[in-house]
Length: 99
Figure 1 (cartoon, rainbow, N blue to C red):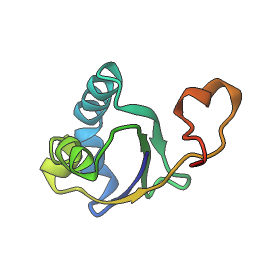
Figure 2: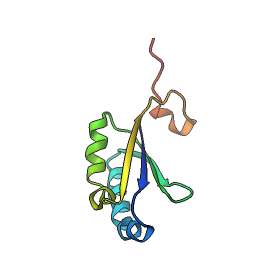
Figure 3: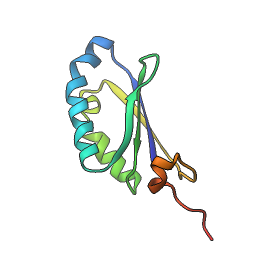
Figure 4: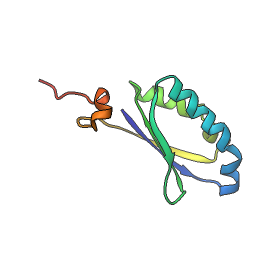
């Protein structure tokens, strides 16, 4: 599982020009089963995405196609982690402890 942190590196007006395309991209990723959740940070200085793909390379391909990245208005950072515990609604995404 991957936590993707986006930092806005352009003025809000420039970010806003690309929000609709970014959301369309995210909707495509949700439809493909790659994302669990996403949303803006508070305060609005960037965004957060939780992806359920197998490799860091898959994250990079997905993010390199993101309109925010293509427009050069965000910088992103990827943190890989193992979800050992979850809310029951997300139990299918938890990885059991090794025997």
